[in-house]
Amino acid sequence: KQWYQRRVAITAGALTNLRMIDKETGEQWHKSFQGLMRKGRVYGQNEDQTAENGASDDEFTAQQALYSEYADKYDDLVHSDYEQYVGFNILADHINKHFSDKSLKILDFGTGTGLLGSRLHDRGFTDIDGSDCNAELLKSAEKMGIFQNLYCGRGTDSLPKERSYDLICSSGVFFLSKSHPCTEVFEDLAKLIKHGGSLLILTKKSYLEQDYVNWELVRKLTDSGVLKKMDTTFVEGYRRAFEYEEDRLGMGAILHYKVVEVEAGAV
Image 1: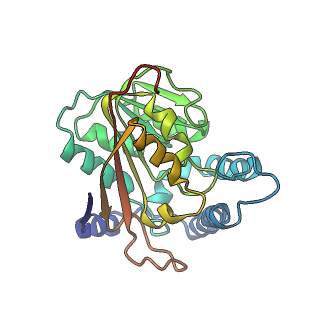
Image 2: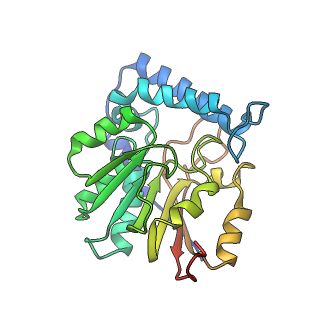
Image 3: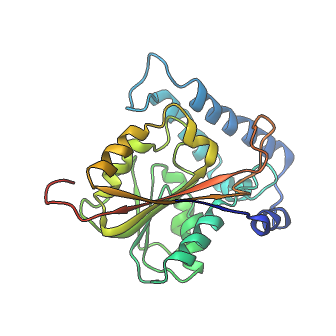
């Protein structure tokens, strides 16, 4: 199923709750970050490929260095006019609407500074872990004091190896570039989710169409009964529409998969 929701209120909220950031910092961040992401989406295929989806170690290192450089300003930057990013609010509202049990064990995958986890906590969810590959960003998440555990590592390397979670969620992380998590990590995440639990991913709608996103891997997981594809919800106002983008509405997409009961050893 596919659902479409107008998010006028959220977009308006983003515009009225902007944080001020000095022009030089904002422009340098925007130029550097969006430049790296665009390069990672369009030009990432090269002779230094090391990841399954075609990303290089140099590309990943450069992105993480930028995150670390701006870690102490990151929240202000994403709330500023340069980004107007409100994906964490959108996904937290979606989860709050569709999951009434506030005792769910949740993993915020790619938590960064903890923006999504904090919004879930504000809505009454208290058993929240976070994971990210950037230690500098995680320092801000730790200061919030709302996470039960924080794990630092790429992919699922640092995470518990048992089915610990009722829900794994992620906002603004998947498919952003070849060096960001893509469908290659779906199976590993499924192994951490309890049978009947959910995987929820919010990303920009246009990223779903990037050539490095391997949907065949997901099809194999659904065909083999590991995952069941639920609905996809499209939302306006995920973040600011940049000048080079055809999408002027800032469309986001919430993907929902369930982990189904499978035979022992299948996952």
